Image 1 (cartoon, rainbow, N blue to C red):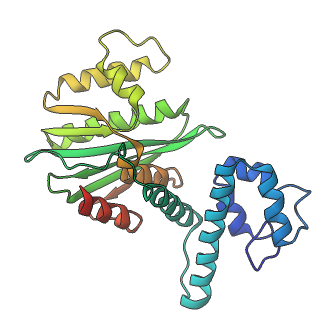
Image 2: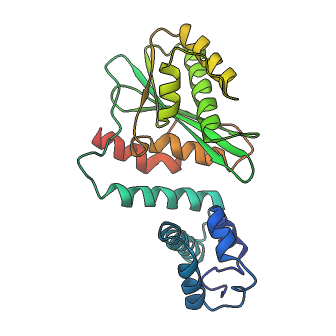
Image 3: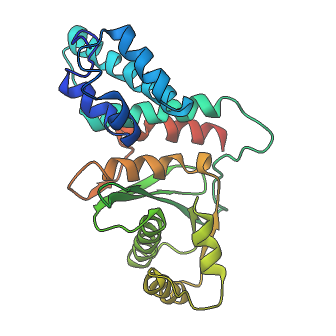
Length: 265
């Protein structure tokens, strides 16, 4: 690959593409090191699943945009920023194909707040991030919070920690009545189940049950992934940093999704 496009010889491009394990394993091999641009793209196309090849094309487009920004505007972004913006673009493209079953983010009832939560999990490292976004009944942004987490066993584990942190946040800030919205159907079902959870995550489910007993005006609900974009982006952002995140105003990487949901809720 040639440096002009930002291929396998470009550290920045390699880091962006390596955000997906499948791309890292297929696109960067000794066999592909000396290929030209078109040959390399054909090589990747023949070995990647269609969804992963689509992701590759979007990420390369993101790298090309970043290259132009650096050349013509003398501005630069981090690898994580390019990945996040590309992820949001992919989500929007998919969301453009609206169907009758699609769910949009909905504002909570008057006098109530909604806290969207999500967890990010990377199998290879057992690390990830948790994120939450707080909004009022008019859809106005109130706060967002996230942090990196290590030692995760599964995506469910990350989602559970996000839920626990959200309930603790509500308790500390006296935010009741509140709705906690997650795209994890498993967690919603487990918390609605009266029995004891005997899995390795059972203790965390017990902790959540105790928290919920102290929060009588908090409801946990399930939604579709496309109605939980903001929390997903915060969790993804948190997974790429070593610091806890807190925003009292809308951060740059949430502007588009918050504005879109505000106009369409």
